[in-house]
Length: 169
Image (cartoon, rainbow, N blue to C red; front, side, top):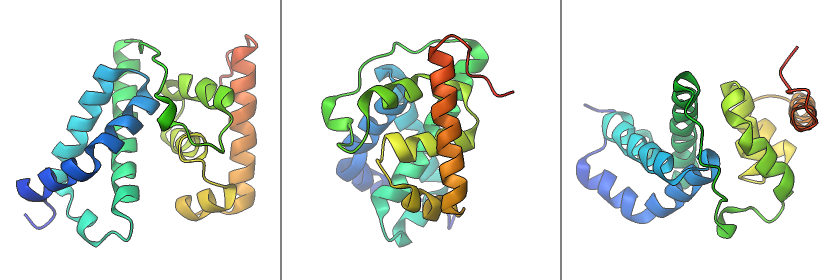
């Protein structure tokens, strides 16, 4: 299987990046048990199709994208089973210093209600603390598009917490 990592490679990645990936999963999912499950999914995927990390310029960034997708899968599963998160507070060291903490926590609370594009945008902006230009590059869209999506995300969050539900019209 050319797309697979060997168990030794996966073990090495776990030793080097496991803590960071777990912290990220916990930040996104807001639940320690779900974060552990998501981390397990990350390494299952790496064992099946993780060879791309070998050539990645930034292996941690590559692994973060895999972890994000696994977390989004857990959120979708949680939504289908109507399981609610424990709403744990992320560890202080998981917070990017350039991010508005209250807004970030509000947006993270709504992740399960977002589609995958919105989830990705929210994580890049509120977890990674990326600028809109960096997000545009990461997503392969224009900065204007990112700006519009960020404004829509902020408005949806505001409406939700003011009681309107913030659901798309």
